[in-house]
Image (cartoon, rainbow, N blue to C red; front, side):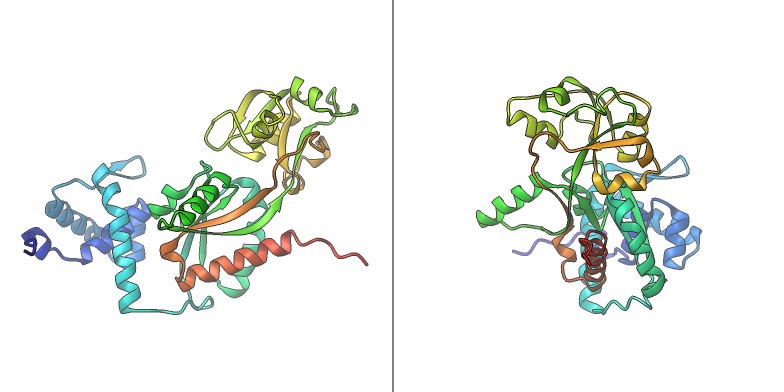
Length: 325
């Protein structure tokens, strides 16, 4: 027996879902109205009608923007995916960079942005002047929820646990809903200020562990891949400060006797390179492969395919070994 369709759904204006999706994406009625070529009162009226149909407030005013209700947050991923599938079925389109006006949201750390965003900006200026990029902070080593919810189109970073889990799921025959692509390999080095008591001394595992350390931790957890490498040889270090940005780490280290670990390529971009001393880590650490990670629903989206190709090309140019004469 077929389940009866509720009257509230039979009479629902599907245009309201487009408004809801845009409001959730922008967290602003004004920007949503602009993107939809509607007036703000029209957007407010559409939200009111959807609230009545769903019997939920959906969004509340919060500061200069809006805050979704739990029901809205739970509903949005399904609405966004349904709209995407409907659009792809009805209006399959080929992404034309020179004519596009798309906006992509990328989640990444400041060190990754410092290396890649300049190259991406140049490509947008020359090839896709109507395309916009929004970079949001990467606050986790597992951004799958962020991507599933549609809060970001792609996450760029070091995700070893995620890749291990995806591989295990694929080998077990489970459906894997995320794709990834390696962009570059980052080399991490020990960093201290010039004039540091250890700056002119040999750096051993023992002296490294005896020092006081600062850790860049997106989640605030005082344990990272360097600590995992130390634990594998029965060693540990004392972390006294955690921050969530590599640039902040450099600023703190310049003004203290703390040691930190930074991507080698990032140091010249900080403006503090002449105040820092870089030393090789005195123990082995696993390769740090920076990956692009995205939800599989975007795998065949022509705009997303273009973005992935641009990122890969920019990364290859940025980390291409210098040719020897």
